Length: 94
Image 1 (cartoon, rainbow, N blue to C red):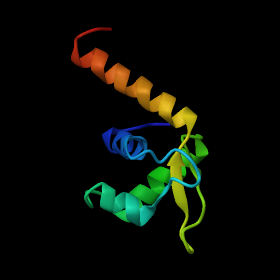
Image 2 (cartoon, rainbow, N blue to C red; image 1 turned 30 degrees about the vertical axis):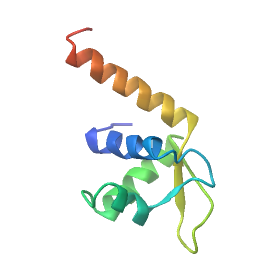
Image 3 (cartoon, one colour; image 1 turned 45 degrees about the vertical axis):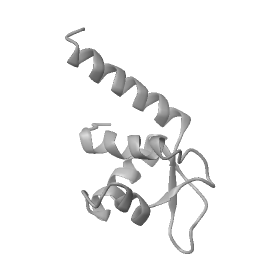
Image 4 (tube, helix red, strand yellow; image 1 turned 90 degrees about the vertical axis):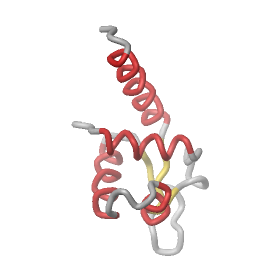
């Protein structure tokens, strides 16, 4: 999977807001608002669908008719590795 900074931002928001289980999860609308409406709901939806395919997020309990999403343990580990890699690159380490 090819990730970009926007994708990492979505994972970071899920992790930062402790959306880590079926009960604690975001709808796309909630996530869009949590990201200060910087990305369209369609962009967030397509990114979440890619994350679902790669087990980085899972579906939570429905909120009415809306799906909800939370970051998985695999997603948390991937996020930590990406951030560690970013930190190493910014420090000039390889």
